[in-house]
Image 1 (cartoon, rainbow, N blue to C red):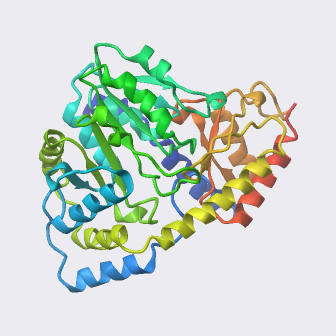
Image 2 (image 1 turned 180 degrees about the vertical axis):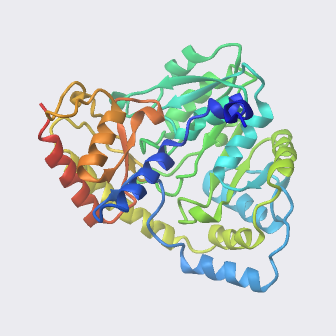
Length: 400
């Protein structure tokens, strides 16, 4: 069988997820060495809070083991509805909310539902690794709008205005951002909204999965801006703020026409998300959020540790992220330098050299649209973070 002939062009043109790829390399290396430290995956290192686990157990005992409605259980959508009102000043009916198998599916559903071949989607860059391929898989053309470390990795209203064309169908970004940890303020979002409001046929896709991991001012949702009413799809989920990555539960609120389209699509692909998980997630959203706040405080402490340790390494420039659990240091000063064996010319060279020589797994910035940087997840113990950055510092001292 000619395998190349059998595979579709769309699959052959897709990139493998860089975070998953680097994590796999770290696991492979760990079969040979005991000292591998993986800081590549965006996964909280805390267990799911016990009251959420208990709610799942009760749901199983109560018989929540059957198929669910494609848009989600009514009780979970009611919990999401209440959460949006409480935390985000978003007032949506149940018909404007859909539950999916992770926030990634929510974003994919939206893109598949609205994008025609050749439509342009503006993606604020650096961006989460999957955004680009999700858009391309739907037939869209990615228009990256880049903000570097000098802008705290945040695109300005002027940059956005210059990127919009008659073919622009959507604008996609995350805040707090993966991979940079940057957070748009209310004022910054309102400035962007002023630009978007003048272009009537553009949908905003706002990925807010890191909402609860915000170290600065209160999280603000772009969907709450009056002039953008009916033009924003707000995506969120249970993975990050509640340490429920393996539960695969995401959700989206938006205009009813979009939710209906996403439900139609999801009904032909995966149908509804698991029943007992939705019951547990309802408990998570409506119960005491103390465990979530405790996780955030631990992440904030680690952020300060990581920034302090990187400040001691010459040639690494690090901003001060206001959310998520990543740093995205600029290492372009090392390009062209060599340790006598390896010359670093880009972020992939940098991360490969670090992995092979220090057994620390990072993710190259090129996967996020910025080849000057790398992403480190500090969802790890303080001991591992200290040890990992100590190894990196020692190794980089060899480069000239």
